[in-house]
Length: 325
Image (cartoon, rainbow, N blue to C red; front, side, top):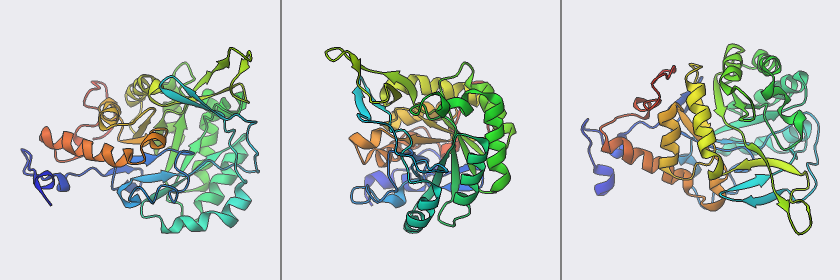
């Protein structure tokens, strides 16, 4: 297939033979790229531009127990090197979601991860059980850290006892892989990570968006209809890399590093800090092919340095990395 794919590194491994698969609990992904919840729809929107089979997984938009209209507009505001959003968990509720949406995910050629949000422990248990029961869903992301629905959206991520309770409740009702998404808006993200690991999480998504605000100085009022929202994009990448670094020193389960990833070098920062996989969200808005470019760049990096598998470099820049490579 040309010089690129026939390139052989020091271990006599061609680019096409390099192992970039990852394992999150019992879920094995052929590529280390997860498409961020709320940023990729269900995949069909990007299918004209991207071979979905080349992705690791699509994380679906979060669903709640009851329907939610979401926040008042405006819901999206550009920010320096990023994006502020305050969607407010708009979704049809789990009843309508199961009836009208989930069946179409069966034809996705990559893994499909359902995302569950809630406002009580019972919410997380109920929605997780019902969503995970569907064959179309390969794993569950537990979104305990949504900052754009007010303080109640982050109650569980910011309180170790509630984070533990929500995770245990979800763990009791499904044996499918459980990925818990953590908030950066806490004093000690590593402490929350340890609590969630002990409660039965198979992996952690680190991090969710960072709380932020933008003010229109002419109108003298917040630009977002919800006043505050979640900041994503390159602006938060240093915050996210640090969070992964700290969490990787505290837990042994795999980490999905996310926050401002647009290029392979961005992704490699997270991997070297201790992430086994990476989540790409806002980057898809500016370049739909970003996930493919990220994997290609990771392969080039591994080949150039004589590695045969992605796992060989996970946590290599983190001297206190606890996880398995």
